[in-house]
Length: 385
Ligand SMILES: Cc1ncc(COP(=O)(O)O)c(C=O)c1O
Image 1 (cartoon, rainbow, N blue to C red):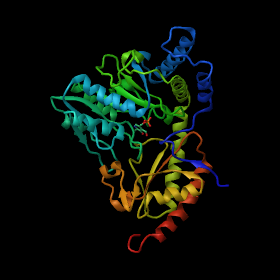
Image 2: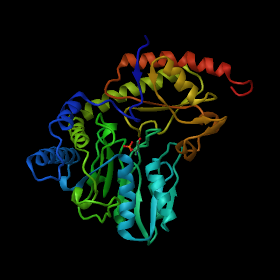
Image 3: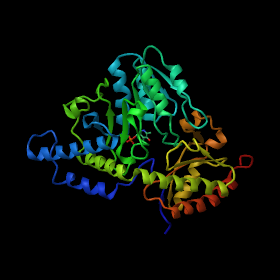
Image 4: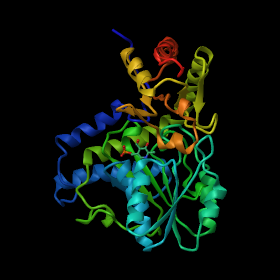
């Protein structure tokens, strides 16, 4: 039996045992509808509000500013469309490397008559704040820039972007799905007005997330129905999920900094170990301004999916940066925006480390990658490798 090594924590994380324990009663005895005024309902409401307080404490904000949603995707849609609809027609600014939840929300707004500028990035996937400044127009109504890129791990200069947004009186939404619970977020110093985060990236459950909305920010609901979440997000709350998200945030407050240090060491060892052994490999994204646990590697002249499947046979779970469908290579929009040449971009593999990752896991992965890439390169058609 192979060793099993999960290095895909940016995709999802295992539920922390303390989170699961906290959630379980909300699947059984505490089943009431939190909107009901009887004791069954009030017990469920208590769970939801405790979770809201925990998230708020973690972020250093007021619980009233936290709205629970069904996922990071909904939070991003809410953040972007909620700001846009709150101001009527106008112009938005985002970047070309955002998650599709933001990019496609912006495209949907364009179809409705809003204007969107997609600012580019440098070779590391990083936005130049001056490009944001230059893109601002008199009718600019919102800016949405992600904190860390999920594929390559680069961190955006949010403080500088936030300062520019403030100077121009434009609200800033930040997709922090990959940073919430992993690195510090100072909402005031960063100048953020709305922040998306998600449960399943921080050892909480899937299908639950949140949007923090700074008090006083005009944000229009995008889902209509009952009076839930102070009329900002209709729909009976996912009580066990919200309870889990609250507990996960609390645990991250306790463990985050030590884990970030530990993961940085392991990530650097992985990068150095692979680079020492495998020719023609490079790191994508910024060498230092990056998520602690993310190493996105480009293997020249090898297909990402072949590496992912080869490592899977060794019990290792990583993710492919590019996909091949019916002989066509579908490159990640992030690598395209970064200008990564095709012969490198086809071999993009993301390793994302987490709580359970050990130094032995990393040595095992390094050991497995070298012969696999060698074999795959030998099998490439002549003239390619
Ligand atoms: C940066 C970023 N934004 C948004 C999302 C969407 O979050 P969810 O999976 O909770 O819908 C993800 C998920 O991978 C992400 O990495």
